[in-house]
Image (tube, rainbow, N blue to C red; front, side, top):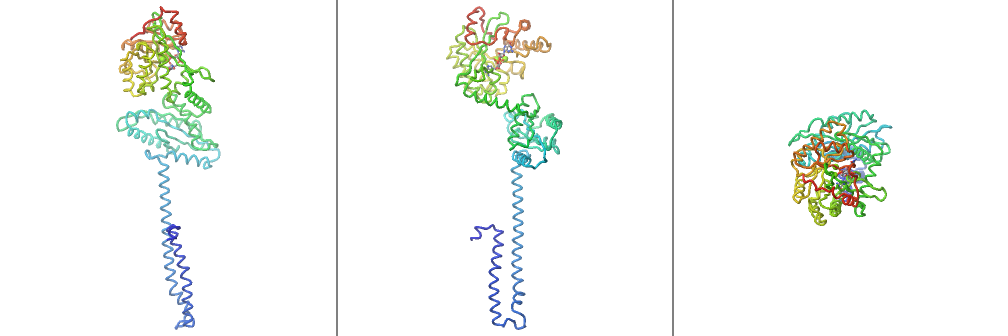
Length: 525
Ligand code: C2E
Ligand code: MG
Ligand code: MG
């Protein structure tokens, strides 16, 4: 019982055999002594008693012992073999992605660790490519998780085939894949591999539900000798990937140190944003929108600014993205609506106010109720408020957007489609969603006078506005020439530095007092 508790089975066999030999030897000696005393040391036929014993008993004992030893040995070998195979299987399971059958994150971690601890030749500088699929969330959300899984398996298969003999591929998790090119690949080789990856998206993916076209972005980083872990390399590849995603469609970027500096700055902005609202660091400026014929002010667009205690005034383009990413756009956006309503309520009617609203704000079901509450609190007629949305909001659940816009419009609030012409610019969006105003993006204004095609596009957008019976506003008017050009094309309103730069609420009030005859009713489309 005691042996059972302290020794594994195989070793117990040996112990018992050894004990048996030990116990047998003294017994044999005693037996021999007894015989020697009775027969004078010899058997009747003259043979020594010890020889008889040796010849008769020892083979039996030896045979038994060796048989036991042999049995134990082969059992031990079998057990060791089983243990080795179990360990190999476990290792394979741990290092394999269950969905695609590819090497997984743990395998990558192991391989990079091996490389860093001297498993590769001196001077080696392997490259790690981090590939992220475009629109994967869309597949999962709109076509279901099974379709998402199918897409990952199909892409994994294409990657394995394309990289065979060139590089090692891993699935990191989600829609992220890693490709490691060993040795010291030249820039040209990395370019070639990125092109191969890009070509993997040239054909659609055949999913059970439908064919699906997609693309992917790649961030490239080198595995440096002073890297301590996989996460250090992945972090650099991730920064490069982030930059690659800023470029449209199937792009790649190689990591550069300034990317880390930018990321730190963004991180600081995100951190500072979280306390800026409570610290009262935001304020609104207002830019007039005028009727194109009368030049009378119809409304002001509210534009947020951030008075940062150290960095000075920060424009919205530099923090709205971070606010969206962190979810802070909800409280900040609510603050903008409330402040704009309260400040506009002091202006003489019917001057309106337009507020920019990000798509994520509509995800908050309470947003529409908040707008109504702000109008009521300020005593502002709903028709004097315009909500400006860009086409990117249509990537949020269309049902939520449609319900919210319809409810706001039913309440009397106007809806404008901002920056029209640079996004998806889908005519379907104009048909599907209730709108009152189209704002033509200022990039057209800049180019339309020197570029025939852009001039024609502005004309087409203005005609679209007419067809859908919405008012049309041209943004970014900086010269009289531009003003005259869009007037001739039939735009209804203009906004831009020619008329006025954005001003404070007090200055807006002063302009309205100074030029009361220039106040016009907000166009109802
Ligand atoms: P937007 O809604 O298209 O606003 C017009 C932008 O064009 C403003 O920039 C304005 O200052 C600028 N602008 C107007 N006229 C001219 C011109 O003649 N020439 C030039 N070069 N620029 C002109 P701003 O204030 O920097 O705002 C940039 C964007 O930030 C806005 O574009 C809007 O998309 C976003 N934004 C501003 N305030 C808010 C806000 O409260 N919430 C949200 N979600 N986004 C906001
Ligand atoms: Mg706007
Ligand atoms: Mg705009």
